[in-house]
Image: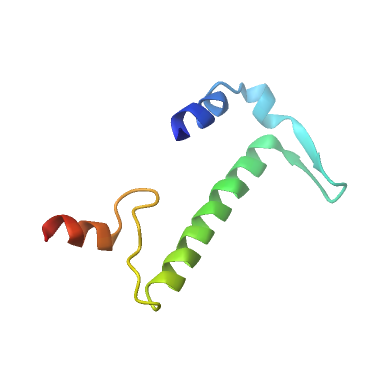
Amino acid sequence: MFARKSSPLAQLTGEQLSKILDFRGMFQLPAVVYLQFLLSHSIHHRGQLSMYLRPAGAKVPAIYGESYDSAQDKKA
């Protein structure tokens, strides 16, 4: 599903990525900056999720690749 949803991004041209986009009148930045922010924001929330799960006694799932807990499960 990720590949299908993200493949249109790989098709964007340099001109499209450098196009200035307005964000509710607050920011006017190139499209690629918004994509970078989206990536960083997702990574941030992944870290938040793991920090909430571990102290609660839960295992951290392999969200974007193998986690420590999923690697330990493979060994067991």
